[in-house]
Image (cartoon, rainbow, N blue to C red; front, side, top):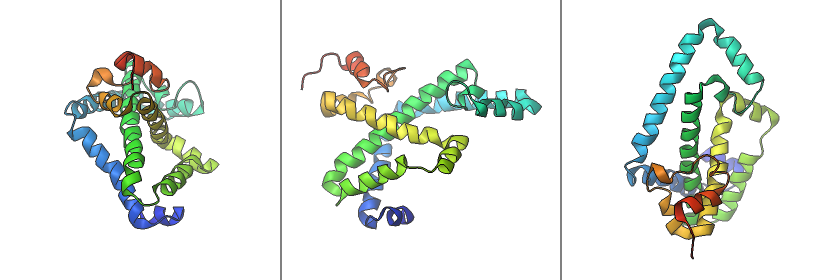
Length: 204
């Protein structure tokens, strides 16, 4: 945190508070909504179990399969190593992670307006740093799969901001009602579909 604050040229204490808001929001997401932890854990366990079995079955062919996946095709290279069932679980998990990260990013900026001096500058510089990567950094992120983490922040924050614009805080609270109100396929990219399905006609 100290290093990043120096790199961004922002004061350390407000930056620490801003980051703490993000992490505190994660605690709220899990502790205030008891269904969330087992829902996510089940998918991760099933997904990791399936991947372990697949890796064992590949054996000596693993390096060739990895090479084919990295060279190209539809979707992320990690998905190209998965079965259809693993890919479904993976995408469901990605939706939840995007929502978790996007909601926390949204809160750190919204609440930060009242708690963090200079939050506008801090947020702008931090998000600009996320967006500007060298070709080498982008390659490393993709090879390690960390590019998915960056995508989670961006997709989730856009989705949460759109829901807030359409339905305000009451709409945001509905995100955490249960598994049935999580974004479905295509809704993360098209928040208006989620709003219609979950909230119906919105009056503000």
